[in-house]
Image (cartoon, rainbow, N blue to C red; front, top):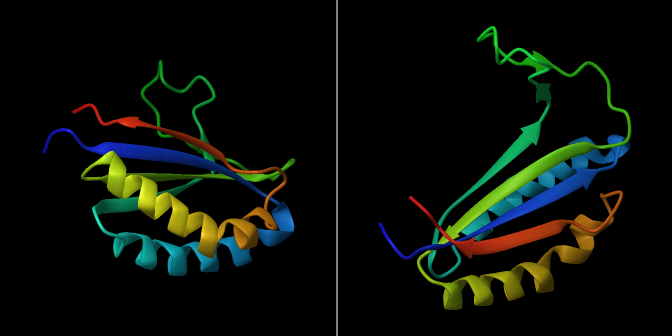
Length: 116
């Protein structure tokens, strides 16, 4: 596949809102996959760290406590940027306010052409 368009979002979730956020993104992801031109959507919870383990080739170490927030990332890929624009508008209309209430700060969005 070539000439696709992708977006990465960073969500910094309040520690007391983790369960609520995870339940919500299960619902949102199903609807995101149904958007016109959506190729796939993935979410990742950042709960591991490398802590210098790369040199030894060891597995990442699980984080043991939440300090300020738990970080989640989404990766959403589209067939073209026009469909991405429509889907982004849908996301903001349907879910941005609900999601933002669970975060310590507004989510960060980055988008651009996909490189394979």
